[in-house]
Picture 1 (spheres, rainbow, N blue to C red):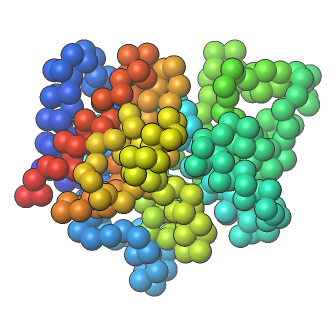
Picture 2 (picture 1 turned 45 degrees about the horizontal axis):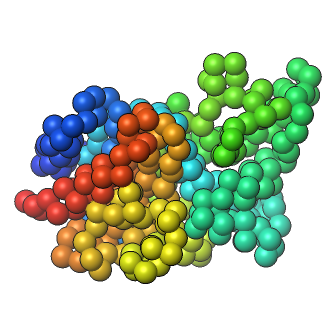
Length: 310
């Protein structure tokens, strides 16, 4: 059983929206898409602080709808949200040392989606380093270390984590050496996330329930996106245009982490749009056509955010 309650009217709105977008010249969209959509009566921010304990917060009813929400897909740079949460958890347990350089890496990983910064963060979290190929025994030891982030998420006991995997760096050109060995011959050890799991993590971050309220506040600061047209024009890789933020009403407050590569266009966002329900919206779309489709995520966002509430 997932952490949100399926909402029939929301499910119909989502299904109709996908049908509409597919009919606009996107054959096969239903197979290429996963969506998880959670809707709130008021702001989600900081609401975990009113719960007596963590279990009480996670037991609160959340209304939502999903399309393929349980299906694991390659997450591209959305996985960086998971490494950010893990870094704050490691810091709280004093497994790593806080420093200006770590904070710079975390900021660049989320705000600019830097792959170089992500590599440094994952090395720190797992005690591993990239390098040449390793012989079998050494590779096995290295691979066990690389499972530390996975082990932490598995330890949360969330059913949404089933079949997910967050143990690989993100790349511009691709993995080499031991990193390529780690992927497996058929790339069977690539990162995998579902929109349901991603939505649960973002729900926790925005409510202040992931790691601690102060840690969640620091993560929210990094995830905040500007919708100012001048700022977006000055940064072509702003993670807004062509993504969820491109389809929100003026005046919306937005926190998000996008992912984009030749075979995928994804985004995970929390929105507070004026005159509409706050919501968490996670959209994963796969395939070369969808990767280049700059209208899909904004279009779906508009249809969902502006849908009638009754």
